[in-house]
Length: 269
Image (cartoon, rainbow, N blue to C red; front, side, top):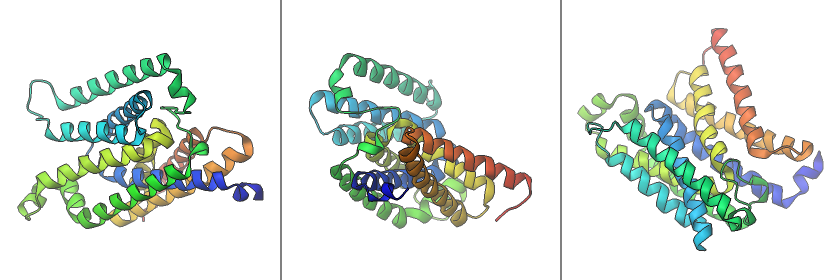
C-alpha cells in the first residue's frame, strides 16, 4: 500500500490525471448546461487525431492537437444553425470522419504505437515531467480565464435571453466556451485518452446535477467526485494491475449510481 506513494512516476501521473480530470469536469458543467455533449466527444476525437498527426510528422503532439482542436472549436462556434445541414449533423460527421482517419493512421504507422499513444485510453502511468509542466501551465491559464469570465459563462448558459438583456455579450461568452473547450481537450487528450477526457467532462457534472441544486455546489461536487475518483483509481490500478483510465471511469459510474440513489431518496443539498 505504502509503496504507491513512494513511486515518483506515479505522483507525476496522478498530478496530470487530476489536472486533466478537474479541468474537464469544470468544462463539463457548461457542456451539460448548454446541451452540447456530443460536441465534447467530437472535439476530443479531433484532438486525438491531432496527436496522431503530430507524432507522424515529428511535431510536438500538444501543438498539433491544440491547433486542430481549437480550430474545429471555432468552426463549431461560427457554424450557423440555420444552414441546410443542422449543426448536430455536422458535428456527427466530423466525429465519424476523424475517428475513422485516426484508426487508419494508427494502424499504418507503428511509430505512433512506439510512442505509447493510446487514443482511447491514454497512458497516465507513463507521463513525463514535461507532460506535467504543460498540463500545469495550461491549467493555470484556463483557470484564470474561467475565474474572470465565470459569471458571464454561467449566466449565458442558464438563461441566454435574460443574460443578453442584462448587457452580457453573448457572442464573446460563446466564443470563450468553445475556445476553453478546445484548449482543455488539447491539454488532456495526449496523456489521458479520449475515454477519460469525455467521461470526466460528462459523468461527474451529471452526477452533481442529480445531487445538488445550486451552481456552486454542483461545480464543487463535480470537482470532488473527479478528485476522489482519480486518486482512488490510481491506487487501485497500481495495486491490482488494472488499466488506469477505464478504472477511473468505472468509479465515476459508481458515484453516479450513488447520486441516483440519493435523488430517489429525496435528499437534496
